[in-house]
Length: 134
Image 1 (spheres, rainbow, N blue to C red):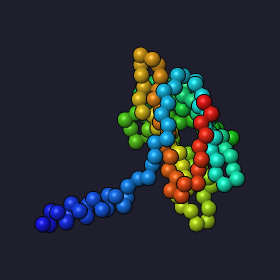
Image 2: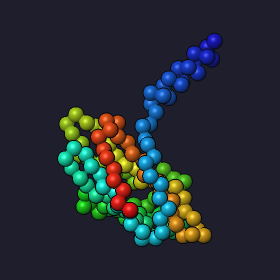
Image 3: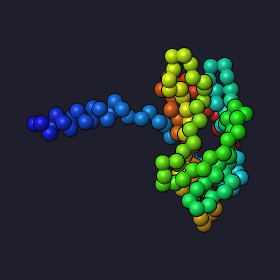
Image 4: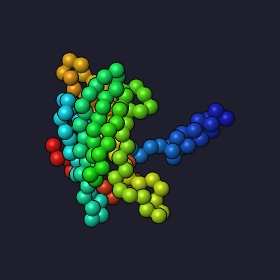
């Protein structure tokens, strides 16, 4: 009986702490193939652009920009650093966790020379609308 209650409690805790990420898009990109996503919320529109430029020693070099802020990221497939997190709106006075998008390096196809990249969205209040411009 104790095992049953322990199992039930463990399931309840894991469901309460479950991550609310939603996989919204999957890409298979060639080198320097740019993808654009228009992010809309409230009265704002911001553009996210990203592409990969190099795959070497298990690392994918991803160049990106969001709201005209340019950045470069090294993403690894089987490592803790396999995602690039983009906060989609500024933090407010009463908001600690704002909606964000994860750009995740999933795999690399050597025969086709293509990187598999997926987009994951966290938007608890459902206030973000994405438009894919590709």
